[in-house]
Image 1 (cartoon, one colour):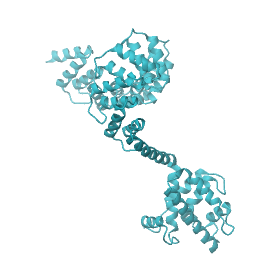
Image 2: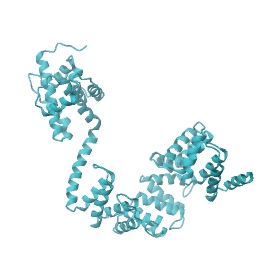
Image 3: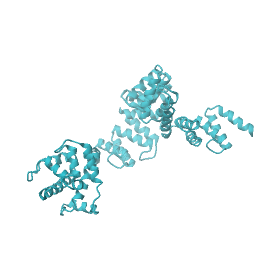
Image 4: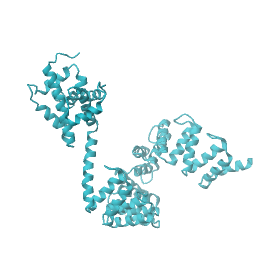
Length: 473
């Protein structure tokens, strides 16, 4: 039990200290100067000089020895421990005290009303010291957890306000930045239409970054209907001015025939320009051009070189494809360990194909010890990220009980997802499920439909199953 022989003088001093600490805290918050909040409070405490109670260590001990320290002073005691004021820094203890404070059950049920009154600083607070302690605790706990985020958001709001002012005066870079903030919801509510408007203003006046991003708006339908022709036009303007993202985007249009005639040679040329300037996505596509011989003679060694550059620059697609080069020995000596390493990087960075391939490594023990449970985990991630092949393999796990308990109903569900995403093997499996009532009711009509789709997509054994059904009829 803490001592209870606190004199009336000590009682008055401590309650005044609580009130003054609170008022100083609110004053700093009202000035929006959170960067210096903690340092300002620390200096304020050190400069207190009231009846020999200027020693921060004595103040701390006085608060700790008070019979109601947990109700009245726990928040400030936490602040002392957080910053080593009159004691050794102990952030764990500080956090415990902040949490204790905010969880205190207050006798006065009208805390919100009292809080409003307190902000006015015009009432006698002697009877609501516990309310003040809780308010201080909530503020200090919020800063303990979220100071960096709060400061970032406030600073960003200030930046956006200045940016808006400059943008209205015709500053092209400010207009571009404002478009970016609205596109990604940074410091403002995400608004594709406003993003589109600001990119348009900046792009029309020649800003190459805005020209590329305006092309993205048309290409993906951000703030406007999809229009590949207009996307191509803006990408072309940006690319011709040497913007590496614009060059990549223009290459993409030629590669997929969006807004222009498909032309692998031109795609290759634009990818080359962008890749040589360090664009990781273009480096990936340049690797793909060499790997499949699109716009250039097939060359696995060159493909490997570009995939490697792109992968090292953080492109998750290339990390997966580099894994494939090592797995199959294309452009480099076959090495399952290195394949596993790069699949792992890609998978852990969220790429669905990499997750599927990592699952395959675990299933077959390639570059790692065989582990069906791990295989299931990665197939599950890949499947839930929408990759049809991963969905098929997850269906396989459920069908055969590999890494998970056998469940024909779930197998059917995942074969269904994969089949509808166009994966031929799953179309066959779905036909099989309908044919034999696996995870669903027997439905020969549906079985025939899916077997035919599988056959059209190159699964020849589906023809055998169709003949089997036909012979029964």
